[in-house]
Length: 274
Image (cartoon, rainbow, N blue to C red; front, side, top):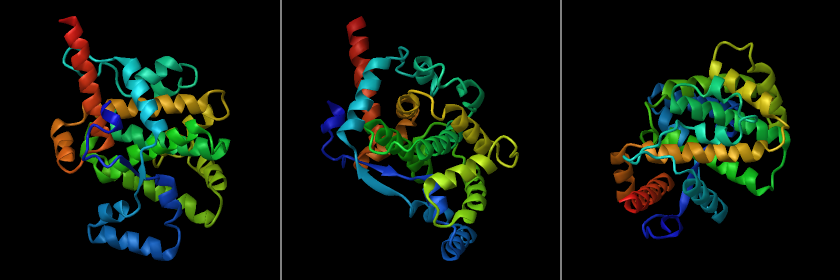
């Protein structure tokens, strides 16, 4: 099984970046000053990358990813995904993800930002930490944001740095009113101030609408888990092959290990047809 250790050089770890947690920590004057200074010196990307961390890929995450890749089988004869990101998860949970058609957005990076915020708002409100599925949802969402900040070339589509920065600024405006407050209180403030009436950043508004719609519905955590697994598998399949090759040369990336496994499944399937 490729994901469980056939790549000796892969560290078995995955990066993490939580956008809301990062912005909540920027509300003190020193952090804000250093962040603004780094942007003036064109070091904004470096500053953002300082707020990432690494965790070991748990067996739960490996098992969920493997099960998802084996069960979907949504590739054409060229080995490319037929369905856009999130589409397979929506087929499994049409009621819970009914907002998907309105808020799937046109760009992959944009979708990651929007659904990452929505996911964090939902998890903060339902307060089910300790659940295996909540842990998987959280680390997958954080991993996709890590790639967006640290290795945007690993994600399909064009990098959206301006959108990330714009969303960060709006989150800063909200978070600075709640220094030291618990995550649930900050989530309430974001839901209140970043909702449908906010036109400055429609992606934050979309995230709030999605969170409000999905909150407290039965099966919401499972639906989010499937959604992030779908995002992950789509990105692995649609990532630029040169980006995968570069990562292999430096020890690999979880996304690249998934790509290799998907390629293996595709070759096995095509071999059976032949």
